Image 1 (cartoon, rainbow, N blue to C red):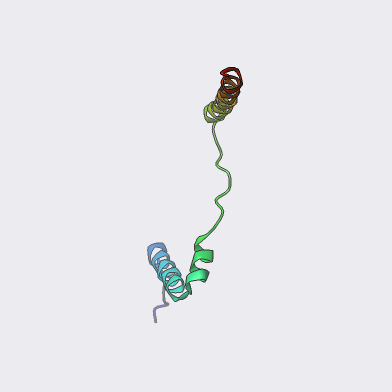
Image 2: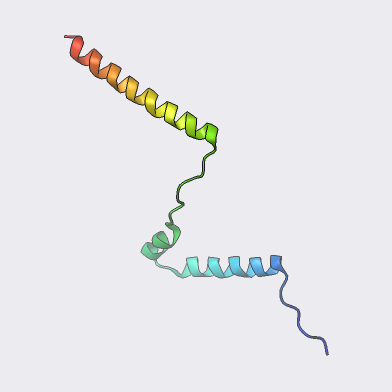
Length: 75
């Protein structure tokens, strides 16, 4: 007698995807929105990207200061 083999990972993944699809189809609209909403968290940035983000922040602050200065001294 041959023992049944557990489903292979692709088959298991297909079964999980099918179950998830069935659950999503059976939810009410507000439940579906709540089920699809999930937080992704912060991305881990490399050193270069962090430096670029800080440079962008400094640039924005300098531009805001220039605009404010221009508004008050243009009168």
